[in-house]
Image (spheres, rainbow, N blue to C red):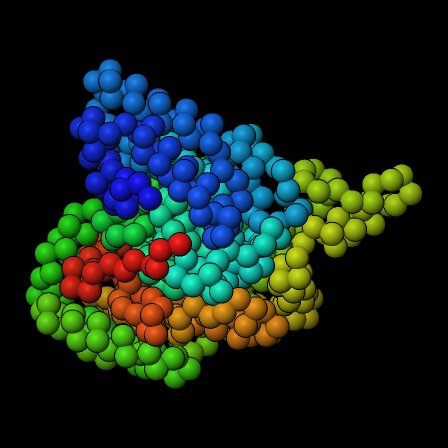
Amino acid sequence: MSDLIKLSAAALGEKIASGEVSAEEVTRAHLDRIAEVDGRVHAFLHVDTEGAVEAARAVDAKRAAGEKLGPLAGVPIAIKDVIATKGVPSTAASKILEGWRPPYDATVMTRIREAGMVMLGKTNMDEFAMGSSTEYSAYGPTYNPWDLTRIPGGSGGGSAASLAAYEAPLAIGTDTGGSIRQPGAVTGTVGAKPTYGGTSRYGLIAFSSSLDTPGPCARTVLDAALLHEVIAGHDPRDSTSIPMPVPDVVAAARQGASGDLTGVRVGLVKEFSGEGAEPGVMAVFRDTVEALTKLGAEVVEVSCPHFQYALPAYYLIAPSECSSNLARFDGVRFGLRTGDDGRNSLEEVMSLTREAGFGDEVKRRIIIGTYALSSGYYDAYYGQAQKVRTLITRDFTQAFEQVDVLVSPTTPFTAFELGARTADPYQMYLADLYTIPTNLYGGPGISVPAGLSDGLPVGLQVMAPTMADDRMYRIAAAVESTVGTFTPPAL
């Protein structure tokens, strides 16, 4: 294993900028690592070897010409396959988009290229980001580098696994109900969901438009903040993008690394007191909260009574929006087309294409969402869920009048074995029990490694008010400074 792949993104950026190593050397080291281990991990759906080397050489040429490089110039990055990448396959891990090469880049991807970062390839995920284990990919599951018999979380398990396996120092994920934070927790990595609207959704293959949020995945809090700084900011092409400056998340991460939380008020959510969680997860959580008090934070309990309704509300809102968004995959405009033999009607071609192209979990959510939006049921289901969403937002607002941030375990359990929950969708959905409220509210949240339970990683979730992303980075960095980082067993 090359020593280069063990370095943080910040350290790699410094070495490339100083000329100590070339961007091409760094890129080839990671490509070699992918070739070495990804047959066992399956973090990637597509590796863009030629494109990565070309991008790295362009960075080296700019450095040789004396151009000023950004802190992440030349640093490799893995991209979740739900992000449109020009000329590179973008499938959302679905057969219905197999082989599709977008004619444009998502805004997040444009900003990554402008920062001089090097895309290694596209990572595996649950189909259309619908899942909590990356077992619902049409191209097979991803495996957790901590234990190859266990899941790496979902839907962004490929991005998280690529970090834990040292295949990439940084990755992009998307978080609709916890799909960045939950994989981060079970792979011992850092996953941050920015404020909704703080990162652009333009070029993101939509699942649930009022919830989807692109965000950074990394092995350290500072690295996540550096990537956050690159991808965030207003985008006029996204109508939900917030026209406000990006909080100084990098400065906050550096401040938190000092380990001083004097004057910070941290709230424990009473409703997340541990019911349904593994004892080992709660033991790590309690130890981490105690560590926060030793760093000077004041810890108080707050009540968010409507959080208990977040899971059912989410599983009405998200499927309803996905049933609308996925209607565009009809076998007519792009992607898979089945049954177009001159004998079937347009409606039959659409039906046959969707039957062949969508997986079982996607079909399940489309059916639920279509039912919830249907005449006579809209007010009873979707309308009621939106009312619950308002109540959850009020809970957050009232809580943040008392405390600066809220903390909880990221997920109720450590990585479970492959196949353990696929037969019971409800048990699978429980993986996002603690992360979903933040999505319904729209605020930022981050998962940072907090310890181990039976040799498997446990994450601490930090939640902050909207557009106060810097707060969560400060707390997460303080946790990291006292708890440290965690390395999986060698592959």
